[in-house]
Image 1 (tube, rainbow, N blue to C red):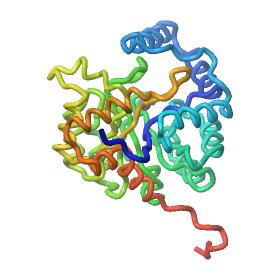
Image 2: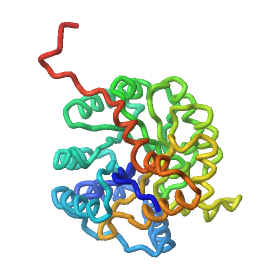
Image 3: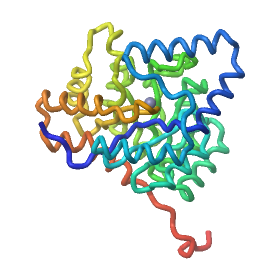
Image 4: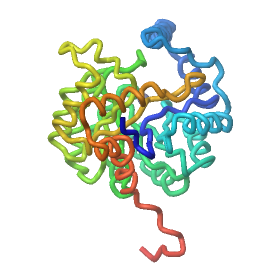
Length: 317
Ligand SMILES: [Zn+2]
């Protein structure tokens, strides 16, 4: 079975003592019935996958960085794209700085707040941020709201990708009214040079994900997570079907590997990497196609980044 020499995981959540504290603070501000719904959904999801529960007190960012270096080494993964779920940036920026050759960081915030256009510019130029992750269902905005355009203009100018969670979520607070990938059609049309990424094959919205990807060549699909949403799919899709139908519809060059790894002690989800390599092998994809899915495609997207000019070259105007 072909295994790419170098693998980039394009979807890992950074969980630290800092991100955990923010999460707990936000939960404490919610009505008890919502907190209960949140915990039940999270626990049910873990139980359905028979996985270890996350540690109660995630470690400090410095320790988490050491753990990720070891976990990526053990899995034979060269680099990872990391982002936080809450819009809390301190630990993400510290994390990237601890090993910028290996940790690729995407920031996250509410893009309808135009003050975040400046924040994004600064994080790209000064902190090596290389992408933007959006959670429209968590914050209750539509990605086609033109209030987001100032932020999207920065993504266009700086050549950074935007990854957007659509569809079913492990978070019971997420509102599916904001989770339809068809909302991406407007931004994809208005910003044709931006690379847009839909994770988890659309997490239930597979048909819509393929539609928007066929319509717009700048839309890509990430393979991350166990994709266990297929167990509720009314058409009886399997994860292998998701790969096959995507390659048939838009080609392997727009499929991007990720695991959706997040917390310790579970660490890196090597089982997902191995399962997805086996699926690609069984589908008869060529070694070149497999290299693209597990590394080349995300590398090409990251390479469109326009680095900040050194200050000495800044001219007037
Ligand atoms: Zn994720």
